[in-house]
Image (cartoon, rainbow, N blue to C red; front, side, top):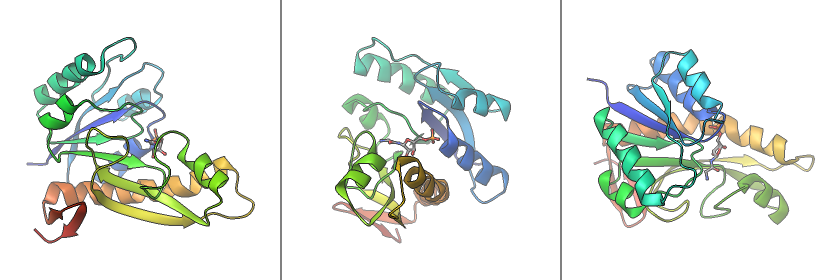
Length: 201
Ligand code: GAR
């Protein structure tokens, strides 16, 4: 049986599409059981539906964090989701949510964590003047952009870069490493020692 993914989004959904492309091409053994957006403005919702995926909006506006997370968990459980993938989901998860899916939640972030957590990571990297940035897939805990690192990819920051150019270079790597990290998390061939995710169970 293919393992069932739940993908949470807030925006355009290009990581979601890259995961779906890798599944369709047979490069990732999994199925997308459910896509949830926390805002109806998330363009990824339509992109998901256009390719036949079950995609729903559960609005987070004006809701208490844990109340909202209970709704999410209920839907994810109903769809028998085994791994939750945050793909541009711009909300912190409550301790309640994290406890429901221990080490079964991944997030992707557009920097080499622990550098530049939070919003506008690419702009932070440019302003800081780093010569390399990149992206990180990590297990999620209730802290912002923290949790053991599963995969990273580095890209150079070029002199002519603006935020859009750097973001595009990073995004190409996001689309590659997220599926690799999902495969590792689903396959279980790893162990966690402290903060380190080591290959081999
Ligand atoms: C991606 O660059 C992702 O790394 C970032 O949002 C973008 C979503 O793009 N996530 C964060 O900044 C989380 N802290 P997408 O909707 O096209 O996948």
